[in-house]
Length: 191
Image (cartoon, rainbow, N blue to C red; front, side, top):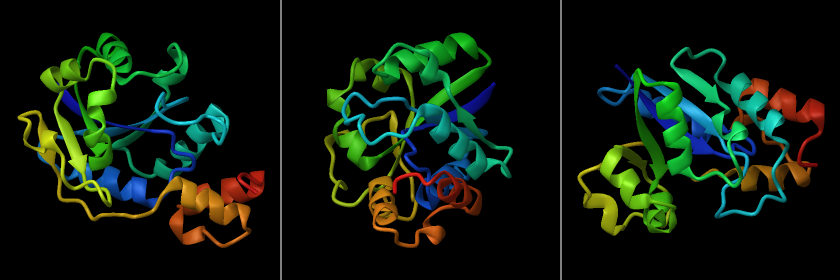
């Protein structure tokens, strides 16, 4: 049975920080692949700044095209909105019974996990790989048996920062992979 780590995000846009985290998770014992799950709408975030789902999915596909152990996943685009992780996990388990799924999340998400729908069920049934995020190093759930803190470089790059730079017509080419940068500039996104 393959172990697939799920990295949820709006990827608005996907940037090198996301890819460093995904690649670091591939180096963990027992992780066969990482799926980047493009979320149409995080119920804890505003939707107004999101590019259309198909554009964000296309950017993820372009960013990871050269790594067969990374995959773009659009399952949440076919589920009721807003997206709840527990519903997505049930849908994936039903669709892919030959895989064991675990979650990837930042320490900031771990700190707010108690606000997620059915978070107790997630903690009881799924392993969670946690990467560090600035300002959220301390969390009561760090010591939960289902949680593993992964040694990943702390990357302080955000999609909102990149969107702001693009709106200001500043150069972001080294914050994105070349295929994503090319797609964004050709489409004039975030300007």
